[in-house]
Image (tube, rainbow, N blue to C red):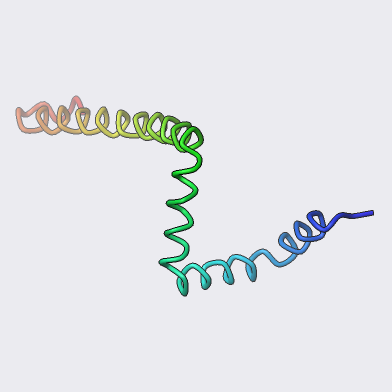
Length: 89
């Protein structure tokens, strides 16, 4: 026998686009209410927020490091071209 939660999950996956559209519309119509709810959740769950921030920072640190390295590489190539060593690039 399926529970109510399982039925909701089945409905969601069968009608995912419809459900996501409804949720977006709800958020658009109730911006203040959704914002207040999110702030209350953050206030009541500081450990979860801290864990999320650690994961987010680590992921972005890697991305930013990759971008920084790529920019340095591009700057070095530009310097070589300006000095007339473009065949090394």
